[in-house]
Image 1: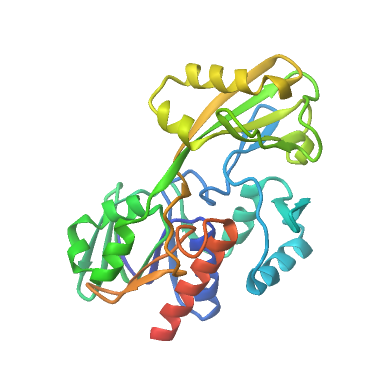
Image 2: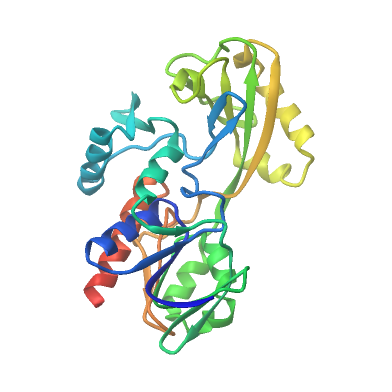
Length: 318
């Protein structure tokens, strides 16, 4: 299949969905492509039996007035709710899990999940995107919101044609990895209200009880995020060893026997060298922008503002 569109967005996380909304409001035709089984990126929620786990971003905060306006709309629609307040900032969560918000945001758009883009080339003043299924999409404009190393790999054949300052900034972006161990235990567990702990030492960076959080029902459903150091040290270790070590560290909060577990590996979890600009744009070799939580602030809010800013820049240029 071959088709031509005005805007292609690679990645259907918060940045891509926000950009799509702004472009659609201005009557632009947009297609979003994502290799995942669903939308959301790190706005991720997984079911295991009767339990439900947020296994990527656990919450988001609000600082910018533009993001506040969007969050107020999401709250009114019942998509998000308050979880807890800390250091003066309310932590919000998806009402039925973080991925539920992404699903609601994606409903108006042409989003093609399980669609891996395998190659991107500049062609005829625009872009040619080739998928794993052999489909070809010709786009006049391209927005890359996938983790930057993945974007650079897809654009390998035309990186030299990007604006030099953009290429240099992109090359400097790096990410921390993170294991997410999802574990169900017998009984209510020992994680205190409001449903999370941040150990000061050890291999665990953050532990949340999705049941106490209000995302799951029944016995405690724990999301255990490993520290970046631990994840790097054990990145290629067997999942059984990773689970054993993290469950040993989590023992004070389990409160019962572990009945099921699984490990998810986030290779690009948290940007550690973000750029200060909300997005990066290059007019060469064809109109292309890069957005996401590695631009302007490594948070859900940062991804929202990055996608919004990139879309506004495209519209201004057109």
